Length: 354
Image (cartoon, rainbow, N blue to C red; front, side):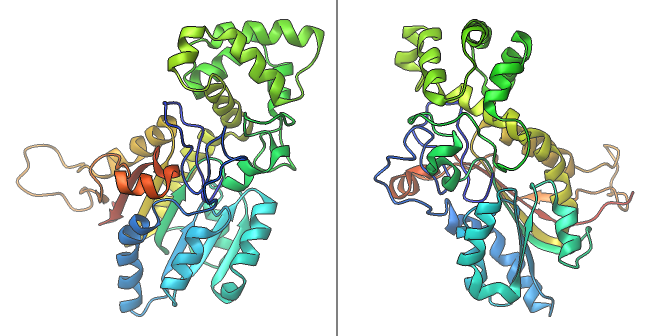
């Protein structure tokens, strides 16, 4: 996951976003790596809530729900000297590296080994209530640049590597397990649902034929199968033929959407009135989860036609962006990894009655 994190986008974007290179280009890219994506915009949106908390005499608390290599977190800790940061990541190696990067702020950080749906437990570890104790939250979703850049993790389809794809390499099934043990129907479902792959059934059939003779172990063999299974006309116009399948396998292996469906409401509930949240999604599946959770919270529950808002029935949040905001051409030129980012932000304006 997590932290400076792009996803394998299901559109034709050449970049994978965040502080990372693309899936196919991450290892060999000549571009600077680990540049936090949309950092200035994240600061512009979250900073006012941090400053307001300080002005009230409170210790401002920020959650970086996807810590990664700590680029965003370092900026916020350096910019706001009273800020306490709670950083989450499921990857122990990422936590180690981020911890070293943030060592000078050790008295103002709580780093927690957990998926981003572990917000409640992370707040408990930091000695904070689960409800209303946080002033800023950043979700920079997807797979981190570190994970893409490490050849043995199997996230990048441009190099031959073990088909692992676990963000936490200590637990869970691998991508090879999915390919070698799932039924035809389940493989097709994963590719169609999580990768929006048009040729999911055809690819699943090819996987079953080939695994009968030899189990899948490395990415190169899977990429070769995908080139053969996807029609040439689609390959010429649809981007790299492996991008959707690799995205789908990664989402399945890491249970990303299930985690998101728990993490987004937990994050919103944790925000104090006046607190703000920024979501950076890199593919449509993530953005849909965010939109689905935000939409009812920005609407009134009072019956239509009433001249006044009923107490406790008004909107909980107001949107700070118009729809899913995209990076400007200048931003993309300066950091191509920001190209696929869909950014949404909101501010808590009230807390509804139960």
